[in-house]
Image (cartoon, rainbow, N blue to C red; front, side, top):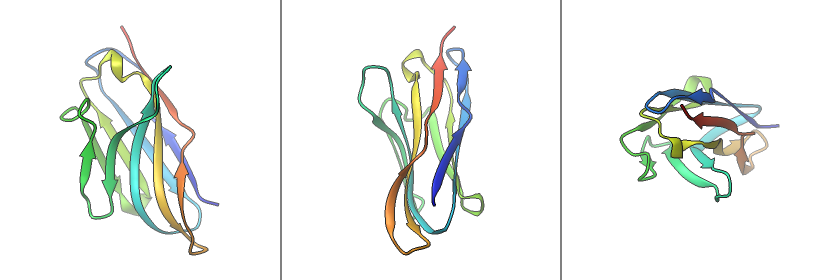
Length: 120
């Protein structure tokens, strides 16, 4: 059973930084994509940062130049470094991955979410 587990959320003041982590576990043959999404209260879930296996990245316009996505392939972990945080970054952050599992099926997986609150 493939699972994604996030960590690193919390309360931070405006202008501060946080680093989120998401680790995949289980029978995994390949990870094609690992992304970060977020969902603020009363809003739809939105893509924040994409990282594909080639190493290409893409960011939502609202976080470009402030957030950075990276991956440690050996640890099956993706990170989201968030700098210069703003109140509008407050949301539950979700990790998403498209994974080729050990049974040779490719599926989409989501983490349980981690709360990020930016407030003074």
